[in-house]
Image 1 (cartoon, one colour):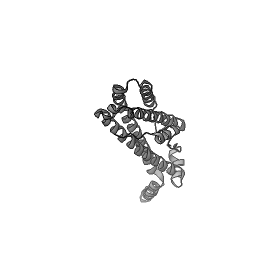
Image 2: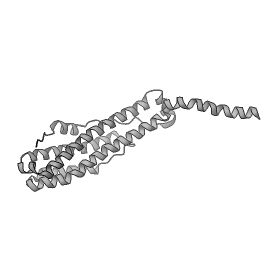
Image 3: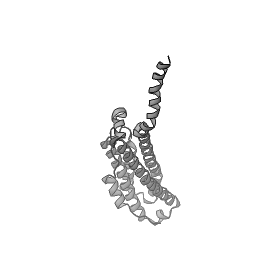
Image 4: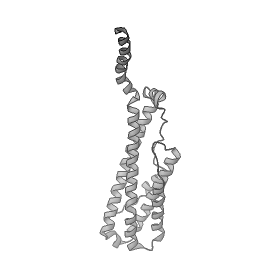
Length: 202
């Protein structure tokens, strides 16, 4: 009886000894890294949504002073509609889906940049308190988008390292089978918007 009990206890004891080593091989770190990527992507999309929510009020304020700038106003409205239509699931995103999402957001950045250039032509608009507050909120949101995007890039890098670098890659191959996640990059549309973003001074 004692021998049988000893035989049963030994595998459990060995498993307990192995657990700390296994946790260092990705048992815990890979799921945590996946969760972090999803959390950082949620923050990126949250900041983009915040920006989209500001746009109707911004457009209406500009329209009050520069209603005849119809083409620019419509471009912002259309870019916003497209940007809010394109959604992304970080756990299933393909490189193509990420590119489409980034292009939609980049197009909105460009349209907003053109709207700010228009605002420069109207001193009364620039002096409007509501417009100044909206512009400040928009600028703050753009900064938060940049920070959130950088955190997401770092989270993807950490996950991809765990998935591809031994010993955690062995755990992934044996247990999880996660594919390497496509990296977030500043797409051409977004990069162009950043480079051409007007400096609006009030």
